[in-house]
Image (cartoon, rainbow, N blue to C red; front, side):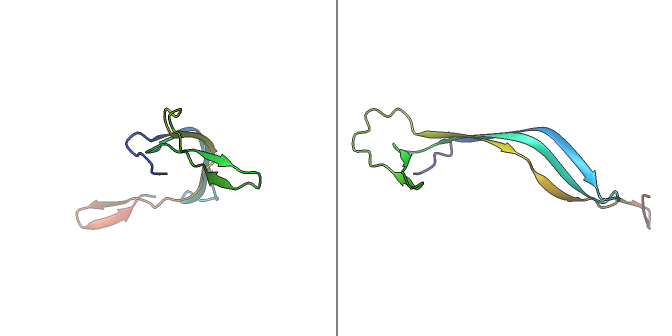
Length: 101
């Protein structure tokens, strides 16, 4: 199954983002809620099916006259969890380097 990258696409939409601090303004968690759409197009005619024992197998397609396109569309709900570090900005004026407090 060769992926046709020229026709395949993916889109991500994030609905919400929440920041949770650990009592300091430099370390925290960021989480949210989003949805992801993936549309995969394949080269040649492909077909997959699920067998009785939960294994995905490829089907031999001798007669592919009935197939119009070979694609897979998948939708995911995403709940990311990121550990965030924020470093204080340092300002440079002349030769003196100081930090913003």
